[in-house]
Image 1 (cartoon, rainbow, N blue to C red):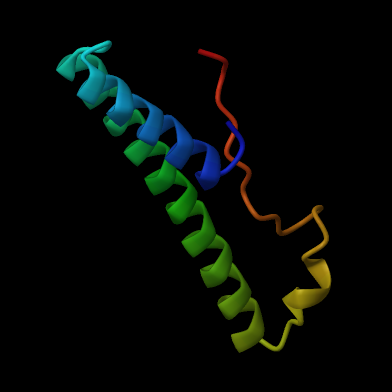
Image 2 (image 1 turned 60 degrees about the vertical axis):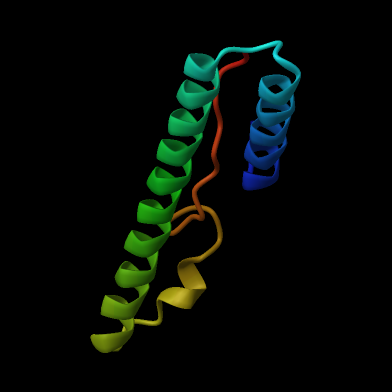
Length: 82
């Protein structure tokens, strides 16, 4: 799982399984909670990077030059296999 589209696919598959009766409510709930935490953690990382850039801009430092994957990076969501 590398992005929110993957999370959406997992959630939709879990919902379909729940409707078909091939999974349990407990499992579907666990999948939803894990997905929510992964999205929340990514959101926090993005907000932190935005704040870092804003602080740099306030002090006259052009931080946009650093958005190259070395100093300021966009977080990538990765999870272990099922």
